[in-house]
Image (cartoon, rainbow, N blue to C red):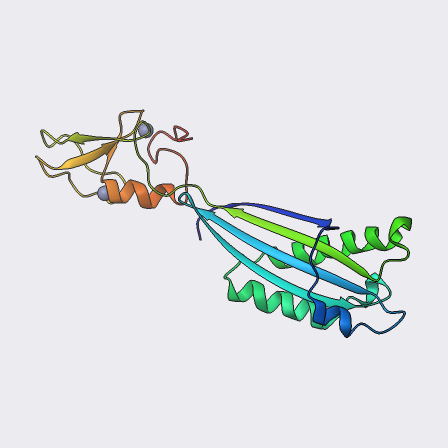
Length: 189
Ligand SMILES: [Zn+2]
Ligand SMILES: [Zn+2]
């Protein structure tokens, strides 16, 4: 999988709308963590959003139990979330839940809504102007240093700001994993 950046935030969500059926099943004197986990994938300018809402009755953070984590694990696997998300979500939820429990202003609240946002961003995998311009190959000057095939005279090649030439498909595959020129390592933004 190409390199991506990853952000995770968990916070209390006072304005969360908790489904009524969850409130009806809440035992007297028990508390409920209502967890809304949103996973965003940002890739090539498109955003995909996945949401999981779960409820976890407990008196203490340590009671956030295996069932909750199992639901979260299943969800993250279903949406093909990168692996590091799992431990990060568990960590963030535990920390945030602990803070909400400790907060005196939450003392009388039976439902503690908590929001988790995970954002994965992949760099764009296609180079365009001004990073890469298309040029005509006019003579058999060199080969593509990624696949080592000669350029065909009269074909198009992709030219980077450092003037190095590559097949367009070759360089686009390369930049999905590396953000620099394969020959001179010029950074490609
Ligand atoms: Zn090539
Ligand atoms: Zn170069």
